[in-house]
Length: 335
Image 1: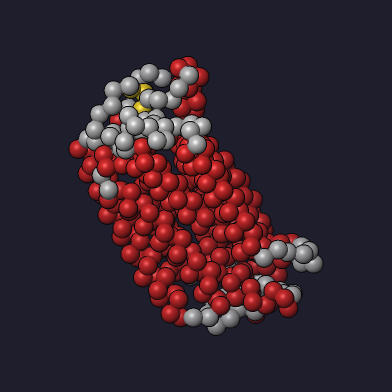
Image 2: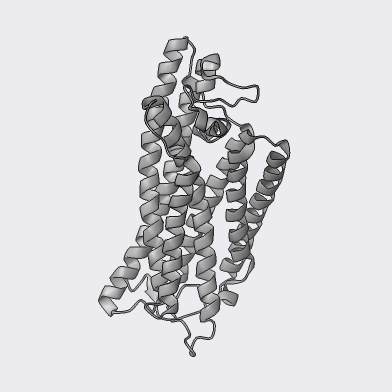
């Protein structure tokens, strides 16, 4: 473990500076694309574009927050590029406030990123509930989404509050964030796998009923499921490894006031953020192509497909009418 950690604090290396510049440019490009798509989506108007615009907004916020973090040199946030423990209002570490703001910025970016998938899963669950449990009462998907995101935000606020009250250091804040994101990643892997299987079941059933092939839609679901699960597996692995290293070091030394070596931290940063760029790019690709849910191709008129390629779920309750154009939008992310 001591080979992975070092007590010698050094400044940002040349490799770290240039790799951050490349990542900043990549996230900036992503944010520009998302902003243009969001503007175009909003200009179309209509209720059917509401959820698609929400996805673009979350992608834009994620990419923008990451761009800000990478554009600002690491030594502006802290005296070293690698993380190290400082306490709030510590006179010996005048940069504690910048380090604290850096952690908040990183946490906000991760929250926006994971909110994209929470929104997808919430709408997937609502769509599948309509198919498998037609008469069951349903909550509003957006309300469920806001509750879940609000819970994650509350954890962030509590984490920051405990730091400011001197309960623990900045590295402990990072530990809390890592454990939280690791758990959310595991949940997302499970939910995506379950929902993907159910969507394939619906597609195959509707394909048999209507005597049309849904093979391409099923393959697309599998492809997106594998890609999404790969991202969350990588994220869970990275965050869990980070948390374990901190916990073991704290157990051995009674403190986590020691930084990661540059090689280990660089590998963590590169894997974490390039995987984020890959999944954001995938989301932009899917939204741009506006994949219909495959149910459209299988069931056509039976599912009331509109002229824009959106669909309403059968047996829609009158009170849910305003949701019907939006339900199909997230389902475009399923195939």
